[in-house]
Length: 187
Image 1 (cartoon, helix red, strand yellow):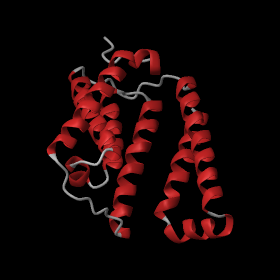
Image 2 (cartoon, rainbow, N blue to C red):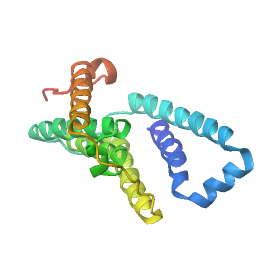
Image 3 (tube, rainbow, N blue to C red):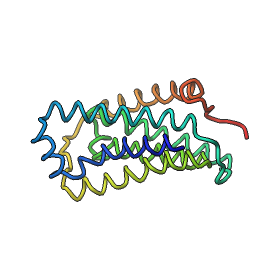
Image 4 (cartoon, helix red, strand yellow):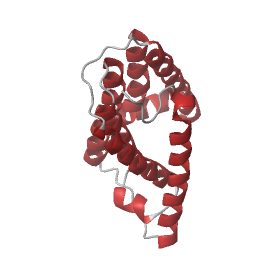
């Protein structure tokens, strides 16, 4: 559990740096843009690896037993998260409407997983990401970092949904192999 929490602090901590623009710019001014990006990537990767190994090693400490119907809600929320995630990278009206689709994706993914998992490690992992995404979205709005995205043809929205459905289907089919947890575990 210690490794999981340390990983969350490292990964989310480095991702909080952009929410402090003066500190971020001072660091970039001191070491340069490329070294900053490289260091950001390395620290992020280290934190991410700590999260993965920490979650895998964390003991199962039950906090609550989620009702089975919440797993269906989770599947819907995660599907919507995949759509938002793909919209992050594909110019579309979905991206224009969501404004910051990556943060929407993180919030939907984390909330969905919080609903379906009642153990302490999951609460720390998904709760940490949900809190981060909420804070970051508020921070983006306060900083006035709202992207101006032009209207796109509807077929771009369809493309986002098709790619998201394919990715979602792949993850659902291989969730156990990827994460060691079946999507619809029978309790």
